[in-house]
Length: 227
Image (cartoon, rainbow, N blue to C red; front, top):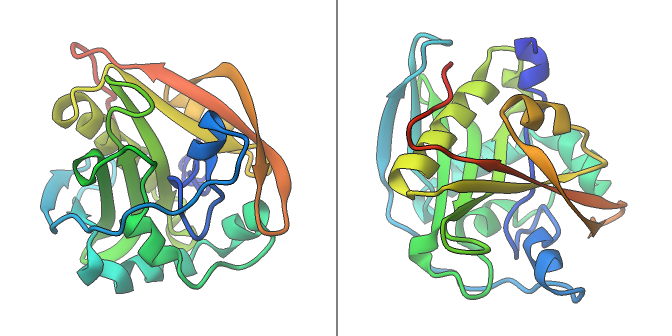
């Protein structure tokens, strides 16, 4: 897959309570609409990682209330994606929801949200829920690269770091995500080793009705994704 295709708005869904994305996690558990949960914010944490593909540091910083401006910068550059899944350019409270929202029953320690930087510029977002919906499973709520940054291999590089976090920090044995059919990125996730579980849930955006296809990947501690 070419880099431009790999970087094409790589998104599964945001976790429950997100202002930009409907509550896919809640749809997996109940037909009723989800509600936003707690609002505690994890402390900022900087993680420097070197990407062989782009030859300079791809820095992940733990998302916090102090980083809302940078989160908003990324969301402002995801308008094509938002139109596909929501029928609108974006929602005003998307940044705060990205930092604070998590599924019912998940504590602050289960939420791992990051802003990705390159040369000090915010270029992507990553949200993982640990041990959800069951112990040993990491749910990728959001993996997104700014549309203006597509074509540089950053989507694949960001996923490589995502998998490393799931394997080594969260000790996950399985990764899980949901792809909205209105946002056709299933090919990217298949290239990353994910496959459909057979579960398909209704999806409701602001002005879009579609379906969410659940995908999973088994994670081996002996293997890793090479970039």
